[in-house]
Image 1 (cartoon, one colour):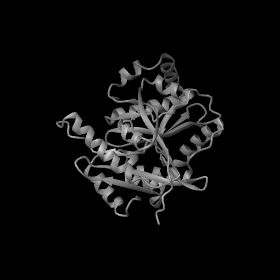
Image 2 (image 1 turned 135 degrees about the vertical axis):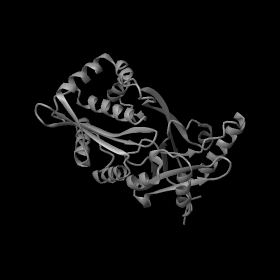
Image 3 (image 1 turned 90 degrees about the vertical axis):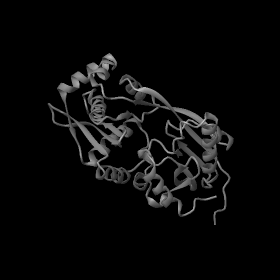
Image 4 (image 1 turned 90 degrees about the horizontal axis):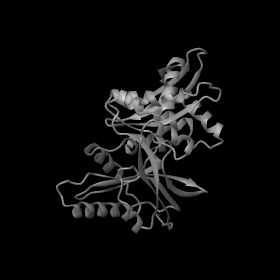
Amino acid sequence: MATKSGDKARYLDFCREHPVPLHLQPWWLDAVCMPDAWDVAVAGGSLPGAWPWFRTRRWGLPVVQNPPLTAYSGPWLVGADPSWPAHKRLTLTHRTLEKLIARLPGVLFFQQTFRPEIRHGLPFHWAGFRQTTRYTYRLPDTSDLPGLFAGLKNTLRTDLRHAEIQMEIVPEENPKPLFDLNKQSFLRKKLRRPYTFDTFQRLHRALTERGQGQGFIARDRERGNICAGLFLAFDAGQGGVVLAGLDAGCRRPGALHALYWQAIRFCSERGLSLDFEGSMNPGIEHVFRAFGGQRVPYQQVWRWLVMRDER
């Protein structure tokens, strides 16, 4: 059954009444999807939940996938009362997820990556989804900067000391240089960039208007040129790296590392954890590992669906 028109209004109420992560906020989805390209199912009851999705087209046919610039999608449930017995918490969790699954749209292909907090895989398995495990790196506590620095890989500490001498890290309010640096990273790796500047600009605007986004650039002190950029999104509890990039002509290997350390310092000053929202690519993963991040699993689910007539 397709989502009814009133579910977005119910979802706005859901987000006002319950803590909802950044990537699932309606204004985030408006920015990265456009308002008409996302929808949501909402389930009430003893354990309320919601499941937003981004609907697009691939191969000329309708599909659901993660929105651009969005590390996590999927369902979100209100935390069960810890005083309830374990069997009751699980039963209500399964029941809510089953309600939400039943209300997903009819599309050719459905694929999303869930937040690490969503650990209940059985209802998806029962509904015919296939699952795989992916990994991100998180720093759950950034309060002890000296301790974090001491825990870095030795070569990374050396790179950061050199970068402190060679690089100037400054805030960057303009989205264009941040995007262009990120674009260079994709070009250098001969990869297709899965988002446009317009999309990033809308998200950048939505975050900065709310005081929930911050860009940084690393500038060569000697030459004055910009070497690397990073953009961070954050809410009251956690920061996440939206994008980062390195200039192809940069001869300062620690420039991007210095920006990740700046992101850690930024989160530390605000009492936030940090999610690197990291790649499974071994050339990137080893950097996040070197920063001492905890490896955290999360689910990716997908399913080929029978098309339903929604007229």
